[in-house]
Length: 291
Image (tube, rainbow, N blue to C red; front, side, top):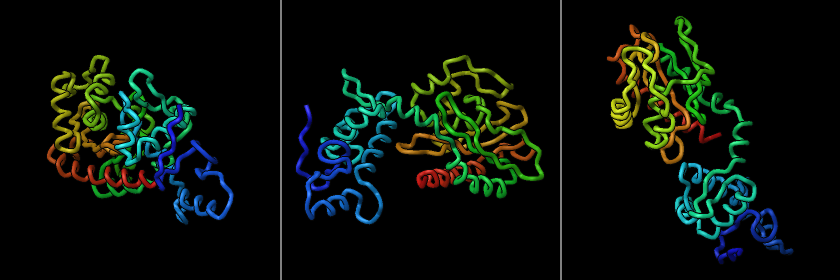
């Protein structure tokens, strides 16, 4: 049963009633004004599309359990009828899925299909200058890893010209044995951490935290501190710090790291480098929002 359109002047939606552009389909002098209101005047923005995107992002942030249309509407500042129609439209295109038992919405498979076709060129382009500045300021390697379904993959790296260091581009990070991985884990819900660490924890060196209880305690300290640390836990001589790049609802979508050999990045440098990493990660987050 279709929910009737409530009498709110600002309640224009996609694909519900009337034409595809959100107008009521009538002729006359009001049609141009309606289209301007829908598109946000001369700003070039389409209000209904902005609302749909905001709603889709909120649905993604509610993972893994999803959320109801009422809660998603409240989170996005929309009335329930608008949210319901937008969600219904997105459901038809596979962008969201609704559990018929709980009426909770989750992100649909179509989003994964679209994401698989996307690269990280835009994020790399906007964040590369930040990495270069960090590397120049510290004299150490700075890199960026992006969150993917099963963990993290390094996508960009800036190394000081006089420094020989390991190349991590394209490699995946062992989550429990790197500052990069621990920066991700510390900002994820406990059930997601358990799922990502379902396999036994490998001790790569004698400093690797392979005990789950100790790791959980370190993750709690990491979140309170704002950045993670690694003291030779993946490779004995590599030390570093990492900070999460946070999106909506403080969920990480990337991690920025600063690292180098132990003689140049001793633990005594961790506090200063950690503060720098946090600031740079915030810059990357702002740059990503401009994409």
